[in-house]
Amino acid sequence: MSCVKTLPLLIGLTIFLLGSNAHALPEDRNQPIRVQADTAELDDRQGVAVYRGDVVITQGTMKITGDTVTITQDDNGDVEVFTAIGKPAYYEQKPAVDKEIVKAYGLTIQYFAANERIVLIDQAKVVQEGNTFEGEKIVYDTQRQIVNAGRATNTDVTTPRPRVDMVIQPRNKEQPATEQTE
Image (cartoon, rainbow, N blue to C red; front, side, top):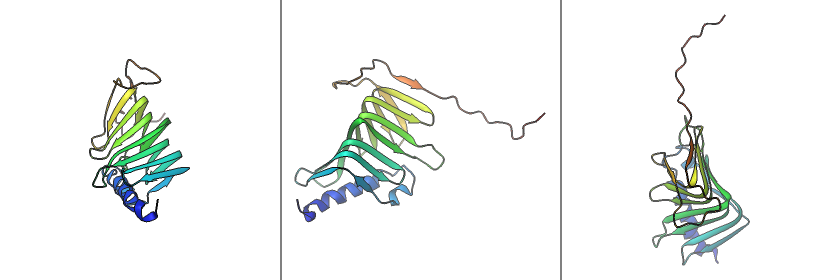
């Protein structure tokens, strides 16, 4: 495949990654995008790019890893779905300067660019500010920072979890401004 033919797909990937950080740290979208993989297969006609072998995608505080990462585009060249598959696949990003890094895991991670939603399937887990959410399937709305966890219907899972497991940390009470010492 010639370099000229792959240019639209690479531009689409760049636009997707830049656009996906609208609700992350402002400096993330100004950072260079780096894709590392053992192999890359780009199909301009189908609008699909497949990266294989310890794939790592980074931009600012965002990091996505997987054994295989597939990016699909619509007919206009806009990224529709970004899919990472691993044991597990991994996503992390710092949503704001005063927030801790959000970490997400799953054997399959799908990122839907249009509504900035991440779907974690099979051994799914999100860790956000000390809170953990685990289940067969987790949907994480990065825009509103809302997590929904539950069963993965119509999907074969390696580790069935009939119930959601959540650990929610207590909110820190403000400590007095001055503490007396003995």
